[in-house]
Image 1 (cartoon, helix red, strand yellow):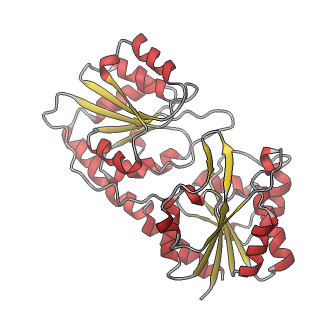
Image 2 (image 1 turned 120 degrees about the vertical axis):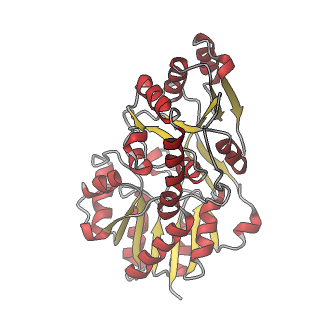
Image 3 (image 1 turned 90 degrees about the vertical axis):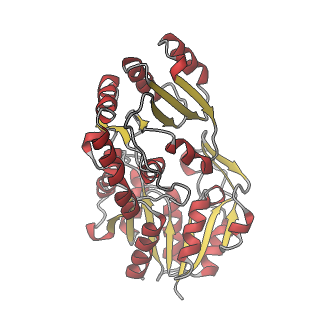
Length: 373
């Protein structure tokens, strides 16, 4: 059986990723290398295992310390024990979930070139910002020259990878995925409704998104309510804004709902909205919450922020980012015709199962691994 060595830093907090590779291990001998501790950003840090150990026992994995560089750009490099473990495993493929310009990918390529000359290397790129500049370009060009396959999460990621002169035959788009088990179909209808329910899920950061929904809600009729599932720091800013707009009776703040309970709020909603704003140094790539809503047959209205229209697929459901008037118009149009609403609800399920399910992602990876070996 061919051997796949997977490097995925946040394994210990991602049970969906673990389940995916438990399935892949039926076709390949799989070992996963991950970080024991990680503090990549303020909102993505952990210390210790946060998934069920019974699930982890089904997967061959090793968690290792990172090299403690003071430079944030270099903090995802593994210590020597992790590298020795890779050499000992002697894989046919190393699949690292890291950007093409990442020093951690360079570390793996250097290891392969020195000790595992016949091993193929694959990475997975989400990034849709231009990183073809110093110092990222040094790592990106080295990696591009030595990589065997680049998997990209969206069309814009492909465009950014091409800036490093990767051979087009080595590039392939595979959408990121989500586990749809906890998001079953529930029939939705707006016929004979007096109150319409909108839903927002994400962090309350005042420099980003939620304001557009609140301003749109102010423009809409009084028979709209908004549920906000949130977990971040700028709560007082939004509490005050809701009061300033005179809409406190239309807004419900819900604190940190468990992931396996989110489907209940989808099923109670008529439209799911996430008005992302493109900013300097940040653009949308992919959100699991979109296919989760689509799987529940809840129409999704999103902003025109970069990769998201590619996921949503239907331009009619995209509003101009930073434009709350346009968002209010999209909401009114969607909820003004029960027959059209039913059509939008029904057509999502085929797309989400055919593009963004765990089964499709696993099948695509198995095909890639088989073709590279």
